[in-house]
Every structure is written in structure tokens, then in C-alpha cells.
Length: 341
Figure (tube, rainbow, N blue to C red):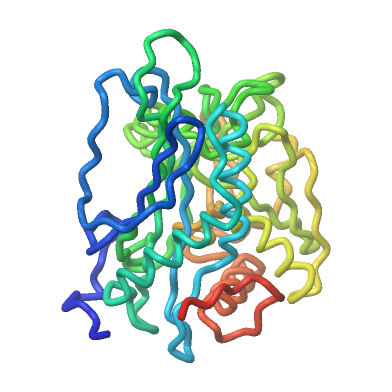
């Protein structure tokens, strides 16, 4: 299939409608078989559960063209598992076994011409999501739901190259103790919007959220997990029940240990020890790793030794190895690369 006439090298990280998307509906206690549609418009009741009580969750993953010309998706089974966990926490129906990966495959195949070519720096971002479309006025789970998955070609998250970020320790809380911070619910991101807009107004790129119970431990940002590197090259990620289990972060920990031979630790990280780390990064699907050069704690600056000009050396190796795996330049662990034919 011939590719679309798109300037792949100049794409931004934004939404561009493609040809088809997947849709499946849950009604009367069961899911239908699902189908593809060309219609990007969602119609629902004004009293839909998603509009009244924010009953919604989502996922994000990418399709890549590898060095060998294959179209692949990175670890979609983990996205399926995380969506299942989100649905269970929000009292939403879980998709039938295998339906998530099937929907991703169908969306990519239907939009094959939108998959950017290898070497362009662009990828096909896939957004599966589920929401309560049935009417509900009392506080209760809805009875009808819709699952959809669409895709859009996107450029690199950082145009013009990666530059280390300056972030601040936020006075806002991202999630409540024993709340919904560990699932990918839309409401979590809505809660972070005021904090990120305020951070930008203050000249910062992102927020560092602390644990809401004691405000002494590092948790995550509004949309990414933290990754730290100690001065003796130990890769450390914070551990908390209210951190979203990032697929990228978990993959990077395997890369650090199995590919780079580094020691890895997932543990509680105190804010007081951040000044002693050599490198810091934010990891997620969109950018893989965004390096952090400076953290500001209420006027007190913590300047990472890795500096403000580029990624730290360990962070760079992690980034290059994981993207090499995704793009087919480096052999992947079994089950990580899902080929779509």
C-alpha cells in the first residue's frame, strides 16, 4: 500500500485524523463483536456517565516501521493488562480476552498508509480508550460503555532535539493515598492540568509530585515516571502504590539490567536524596526518556551533574538501546515486539 503524502520529517506531536478507527459497544451485559468505522465523531447522551462522573480510561502505544521494513507494535499485551486493571478499578466492563490486541492490529492494518517510514523520526501513535456512554444521574456505574481505538501519525515529542528539562517540586497532589494514581484514568490527567499550566506560567517544564501522605517521597510527574541514576551507575525508580506502572519505565529497567549490565532498584526515593543523584529522566511512551537537568524545590535549585545541554551518559545508553529494540536495530527480548502483517 502506498504511503500518504505526508511530510513525515516535520510532523508535530498532535492529532491528525486517519482513515479508520475501531469501535465496540457494551450493552445489556455483553460486548458486541466490534467493527471498523470511518466516522471519527462520537455521539452520546447528555447524561452519559463519562460526562457526569468521569468514568473513562485510556491507553497509548506506538506502531513503528523497523529497519527491516516490518510494522511492529511495542508490548501491546502490557497495555491490555493495564487497561483491564483500569476498568476493574473504575467499575467498567473488561474487554473480552484478546480483544485489545486484535483492535490494535485492525487499526494499524486499516491505516497502513499512515505508518511513517523507517528513519523519518515519526511513528503511528495509537490511542485506545473506553468510556461510559449510558445515561446515569445517580452516582453509580453506567450500564453502557464504548471502547474505541484510533491512530494518528506523530513526530518526535521534542522537535529540534532533546534538551534537559527544568522541573519544580509541586505543591499540588497528583493522586490520593489508596486512590486511582496507579491506573490510567482520564480523571487523573484532568487533575494535573491546572498544576502543569501553573508550572509553565512559572517557567518550569514539568511538576515533580510527592507522596500526598507525607510529602517526603518522589512519585511521578503528571504524565511520566521518574528514573534516576546514582553516581555509581545504579538505576533507581520510585516505588509507590499510587504511581502509574509505566510500560516504558519497566522496559528500561530490563534494558538497564539485561543489556547494559547495570544494577537496578525500585524503591522509595526520598526528596532529600535527589541532590545526590547523577542523572534524572522522565520516561513514557511519547518521548521514551526526557532528561531532567534541574529540579527547583521552592527556590532551592538542585542541578544534576549531567547538566542542561544533553542526556546523561547512562540515560543516553538506555534511550538508544530501547529505541534500537523498538526500531529493530537491536534484538528484542521474547514477546516485546508484536509484528503486524
